[in-house]
Amino acid sequence: MKFGIEFVPQIPLNELVDLVKLAEDVGFEYAWIT
Image (cartoon, rainbow, N blue to C red; front, top):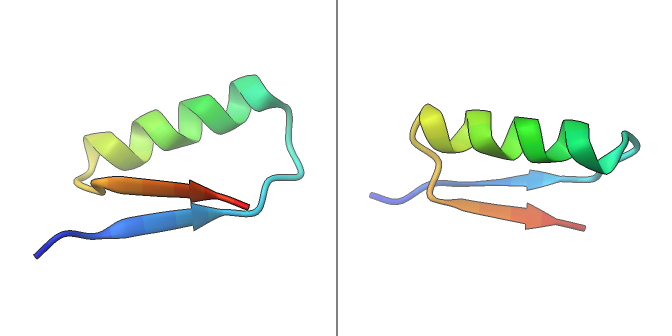
């Protein structure tokens, strides 16, 4: 099974990138940024 995560950012882009990388590290395969 594949899992994704959605971000509705209200933080700087560099912090968002760090969070997406962390999500990948723990097994999420998709990231949506809305």
